[in-house]
Image (cartoon, rainbow, N blue to C red; front, side):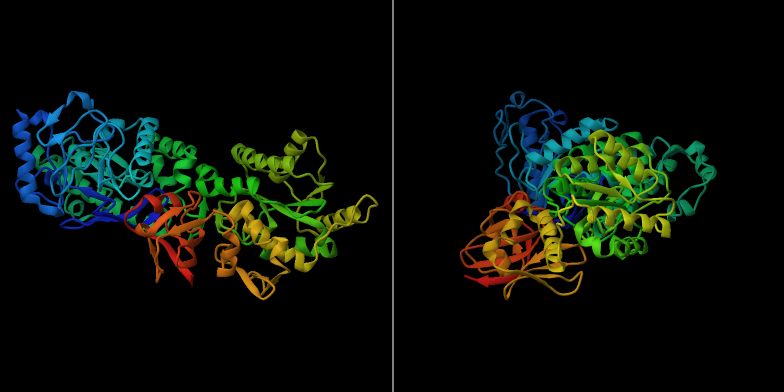
Length: 626
């Protein structure tokens, strides 16, 4: 098990943690390469050097022994070439002093502080892993991402990943976003001796600068003209101090973004600095499974969809997938399509209020779906559910082709799966173009009621008359939902989105007569006198009661099994024996042990709960002693 590394906060693959060394390191962090190589007075992390710097195995063994004697148990030692993937073939290494390195086997380590990595096969569980040759992968976005994903899939989740010789102020945000915990200042020092001035917006040659675009203490005391007159070594000292300050300042901003849950919004802008960083972000979104299991089910902050990359970010793709795969619409024959609104949830916006009033008594006969970018389609029942009620986007009145293709694809998939006798679209502009494209592809008829302004008296009358005409026709079967059924269906749709097909366990006929109490949006689901769940309006998902959890026990989904103890607070990862791999951070989970049944919210993914040695796995809300 890991001894020193503990994750405290997550934002997707990015995380804030600490290495419990002497002194303690808080990650993500920057290692000082000058300090890293000090063998006489080692710090919390020390590099034992390279095979090529010693003349014999005996000399190497003596060096490692010297470090161990001086370092103590509060230091991690990077052993020579102990990186993953291996820098050189394991079979060519043979025996190196006490460190046996046969092909595909563990690095034998008898020292008190532990080796950091192993060569060949699958890495042993330890506290810190080094990404060999990370600096050589700059500008090769595909290979870099493949290496990071391979590493992360091989090593335990509660271990730190160090990518040496790569960090610059311009790229540190996306490196952390993809899962790098530790970097160093090698590149900033090299840049300083090359007369390169670094900023988060890119690098500048000293000769090209008229003024310093930074007001740190170092830059405020000089000008580019003055600096150019200094001897090279003096210029290098100045630039080195600034470059390191710029690197640390950017890292501080990244840590704050992680704490706020807004790192994704930041890197969507920051990645524009270099083409390879933009490629990294886009390729990362294609690796859905790598990021999705790390991205929380909901966030406290607003999701800002301001760039084209927002269409492929995990929260958007996950919402669209769950609507397609988990959601079941009510058994109604008429579908009405509406455009989105700036105010969320849509139903409290002025435009949607007018749409609803126009439907009047016929509203109980229709199913309402909202078209929107970036989410695609949002059934009315899911308008509270994250991120449908938590996003904002730039409104220009112009849709690019990528947006149209995405939304029309979502609508086409939905209408291919669910057929309606009549489809009414109260839309105009790009929304209508999307509907026409889908109607043509599926060879179906859509009736359009929008004329000019959708909230004009003419347009609203057209909507009302069209729906009334369909509802009063002889072919219409009068399928409808009464007020109580509509509330139950509302919660059922949310439960399906949240729990998948196992939501049926909460709404089974065997449960008894279901009723929804409370005023919207603070609905509570009851079966007789037993409360099963409560809708949490802040993120539009259900919080289970213990009675609801007992019903869900018939399934193994969203279940966390623990050791034989009675929880008295948060459940730590070492206490978890099994967990559904489908659990994501912030998911509602059921916890079961021999002594207790609990409900709570996941702090980490199900896979991480099982594989981690440290950290909170579940924040428990209710406990029932068994």
